[in-house]
Length: 214
Image (cartoon, rainbow, N blue to C red; front, side, top):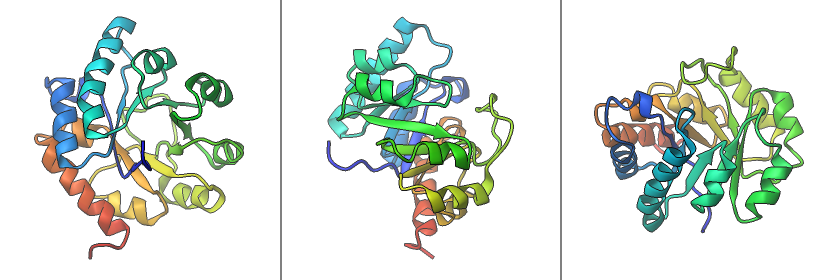
């Protein structure tokens, strides 16, 4: 796969999808400009997660959109996903890299400057800065990094930074301007009345934050 564009990163959540199918959310978000998709299925059985991942892969692969699996390395390997996203309490990164192989995309959540420092010697593909702002989709984290947290991590990290947590069209530009390379979005796409239109709005704000639009 060519160089990965993490700019607009969809993280799925069927519980926030207003009764719509996973496929509907993914297809509409990609039509609006989502550049990478993470399947996050905390409550699905292994078999259900596998089936959802296979369907997502079948849609995304011909469109050259990477599929990332959250946490579950067994699912990632079973469907030959493009990558895996892990958190601070998941499988250690060196073990995940050994199992996934050198060509896989592996992202790691960091919740502090120290986490980012600890990851500096690893060849992770990106760091997920989490959460930038408090959000109900991250119930296990009790603080927010804010814009200053992005600036602090940017100052010490060589990795691609993907910001997640409480991100929407009204704060995307300032998040990018603070030093994030891209944004990961859950509810602002999954719960949007029109995910395609929502993705287009987010893209405009990404470009604004990069200084490409006024």
